[in-house]
Image (tube, rainbow, N blue to C red; front, side, top):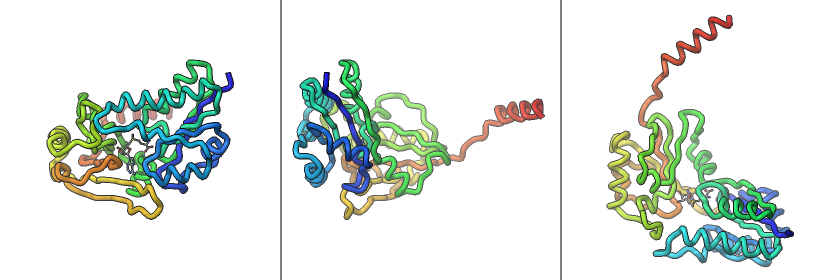
Amino acid sequence: MSGSLACVGIGMTLGAHICPLSKSYIEQADVVFSAVSHGITELWLQEMHQDVRSLQKYYQEGKSRQITYNEMVTAMMTEVRAGKKVVGAFYGHPGVFAQAPHKSIAMAKAEGFPAKMIPGISAEDCLIADLGIDPGRFGCQQFEASQFMFYKRQYDPSSYLILWQIGSAGDRSLTKFSTGAAYRLVLIELLSEKYPLEHQVILYEAAVLPIDNIRIETISLSELVGADIHMHTTLVIPPSEKMLPNEKLVARLAEIEQELA
Ligand SMILES: C[S@@+](CC[C@H](N)C(=O)[O-])C[C@H]1O[C@@H](n2cnc3c(N)ncnc32)[C@H](O)[C@@H]1O
């Protein structure tokens, strides 16, 4: 079976973030499928390869994203099964908050085709750089915003909290491109169990085109309800509390150190 699949990341900023390995996979592919956030990025991919097919066309407001993801997987797998060297070029990192690359790679492997993922620079990587955050300093938890609302998640207000897909937070139907104030109010209520309403949170948007302005807008948690939020906005909540020392555990470690000394 000669077909193969590589899902590669092209990073966030057009032309600036792609690694040589992803570029080489794209150039050597028989067919490239693209899931990118901007039409210009699609044109840029077409300069690297003559057969670039958009996966974005499967997204439609009112259609379940689950159907969209399955259609993306089917489109790529049909060509893999036909013996082609297939590349899926995804913006950011193909494995970060993205179902189709994981699903298609698992399916290709299960059917005996070589399949792999090549990482890319994700929105998280950009926000770490642009906001000057080190996830190792206080810890960092991240969730898809709707999942964070649908399930009783344990989270720690002494660490960073990153909520992805905040624009469609609370959409149970998986069909909406954006949800409005009523949904956000529910999210704010949930977050207010751990954070004061005046706690400062950040709306973040990385640059997609090199000329784009990076959005770093600091607002209070309560202002989130009326904020301008897009599909490509990520919410960053800095810690509101100090880390609590675990004195009992530290004492046990001290005992071990004494015994060893
Ligand atoms: C389906 S996920 C894809 C993430 C992508 N795979 C990555 O590596 O960043 C879409 C979410 O990523 C985040 N995102 C996408 N583009 C962004 C941008 N330009 N700036 C900040 N966050 C972005 C938003 O939270 C958005 O709702």
